[in-house]
Length: 70
Image (tube, rainbow, N blue to C red; front, side, top):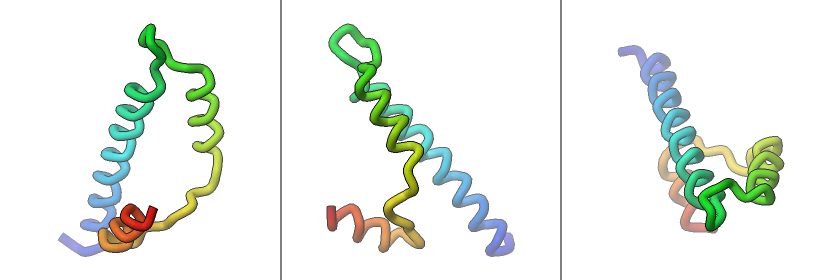
Protein backbone atom coordinates (compact mmCIF):
# COMPACT_ATOMS: atom_id res chain seq x y z
CA UNK A 1 0.00 0.00 0.00
CA UNK A 2 1.48 3.42 -0.93
CA UNK A 3 2.40 5.61 2.05
CA UNK A 4 -0.01 8.42 1.06
CA UNK A 5 -2.92 5.98 0.92
CA UNK A 6 -1.86 4.41 4.22
CA UNK A 7 -1.72 7.86 5.87
CA UNK A 8 -5.16 8.75 4.50
CA UNK A 9 -6.55 5.50 5.91
CA UNK A 10 -4.97 6.13 9.31
CA UNK A 11 -6.37 9.68 9.41
CA UNK A 12 -9.79 8.32 8.54
CA UNK A 13 -9.55 5.82 11.40
CA UNK A 14 -8.47 8.55 13.83
CA UNK A 15 -11.32 10.81 12.75
CA UNK A 16 -13.80 8.00 13.43
CA UNK A 17 -12.27 7.34 16.86
CA UNK A 18 -12.45 11.03 17.77
CA UNK A 19 -16.10 11.13 16.66
CA UNK A 20 -16.91 8.14 18.86
CA UNK A 21 -15.01 9.53 21.85
CA UNK A 22 -16.65 12.94 21.47
CA UNK A 23 -20.07 11.30 21.38
CA UNK A 24 -19.22 9.25 24.47
CA UNK A 25 -17.96 12.26 26.44
CA UNK A 26 -20.99 14.37 25.58
CA UNK A 27 -23.26 11.45 26.41
CA UNK A 28 -21.73 10.85 29.83
CA UNK A 29 -20.63 14.28 31.07
CA UNK A 30 -23.31 16.35 29.42
CA UNK A 31 -26.27 14.68 31.07
CA UNK A 32 -27.86 15.99 34.20
CA UNK A 33 -29.44 13.84 36.93
CA UNK A 34 -32.57 13.21 34.89
CA UNK A 35 -30.50 11.88 31.97
CA UNK A 36 -31.03 14.90 29.73
CA UNK A 37 -28.32 17.08 28.28
CA UNK A 38 -27.46 20.10 30.39
CA UNK A 39 -28.15 23.21 28.26
CA UNK A 40 -25.09 24.95 29.70
CA UNK A 41 -22.85 22.04 28.75
CA UNK A 42 -24.26 21.82 25.23
CA UNK A 43 -23.74 25.56 24.78
CA UNK A 44 -20.09 25.28 25.87
CA UNK A 45 -19.45 22.30 23.60
CA UNK A 46 -20.93 24.09 20.61
CA UNK A 47 -18.91 27.20 21.41
CA UNK A 48 -15.64 25.24 21.66
CA UNK A 49 -16.40 23.33 18.47
CA UNK A 50 -16.34 26.62 16.54
CA UNK A 51 -12.85 27.57 17.78
CA UNK A 52 -9.62 26.80 15.99
CA UNK A 53 -7.69 23.83 17.40
CA UNK A 54 -5.04 24.77 19.95
CA UNK A 55 -2.67 21.92 19.10
CA UNK A 56 -1.63 20.07 15.99
CA UNK A 57 -0.29 16.57 16.36
CA UNK A 58 2.04 15.22 13.73
CA UNK A 59 2.73 11.85 15.31
CA UNK A 60 2.00 9.76 18.37
CA UNK A 61 4.94 11.10 20.37
CA UNK A 62 3.87 14.74 19.94
CA UNK A 63 0.34 13.74 20.96
CA UNK A 64 1.57 12.00 24.11
CA UNK A 65 3.88 14.90 25.00
CA UNK A 66 0.92 17.27 24.91
CA UNK A 67 -1.26 14.98 27.02
CA UNK A 68 1.39 14.61 29.71
CA UNK A 69 2.18 18.34 29.57
CA UNK A 70 -1.38 19.33 30.43
